[in-house]
Image (cartoon, helix red, strand yellow):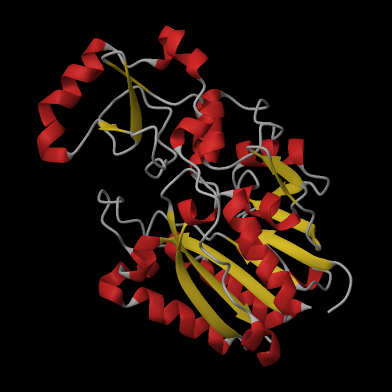
Length: 321
């Protein structure tokens, strides 16, 4: 396949997956070259994510429910990508219980299938949480793979750990890739996991240690201590290792979450939005300032790490060529 790979991005969020697809950025002193993918349409239902996205990309995201997307209005394209909503499949989503594909949000992957059947692009990339593999007592994932295959694709999947690809975070995500052409499928290989190791210390801003607003209150610490052993809260991170997975809850001033925290001079502190973005492997040049800090945390926590996505996209581009 020669030339530009025209791409439509669903559930694009603030653009972590799309930045990785397009490439052409630097992170922690390493350059990630431009890739042949061109985003020709991007859709998300969160207006705050749309604002962030549109600060950073030439193609502007549309705030839209993908279920209302008319496939007849779509121009022909080569690749469909989407990190379909994951809350229904997340292991940490204990309240409400993990509903998986029985939940409305959990069924949104069918929208990807609908578009694949109608437009028949050459390939697709889907992303979701590790919990997808065990949701609905293990029944959801085989059903999802089967639906993608019935749409006419040869499908491969793998559980990837972001820290294996130069990201300072132990984020585990299921990547599903499908090719319409068996030849593309046969030559595709997931990227080598022996990337340069990054650790939390690489992305921490020590100047934040002098700002009171990033530290948890005494009340928050007392509340956490009461349930610390039973509920495994207050998860202090080792600066010389990759960080635990960050989520969309980082804006909370409570310590009663599963999010990682720092322990500085005997006190607990949360990550700044800039630190959270770096943990996700966003370059410092990526702009988040068009929305409030709480919306920044949510968008960052839900994003796909761009550096991990770049490694995947590079291999997909090679197979499609």
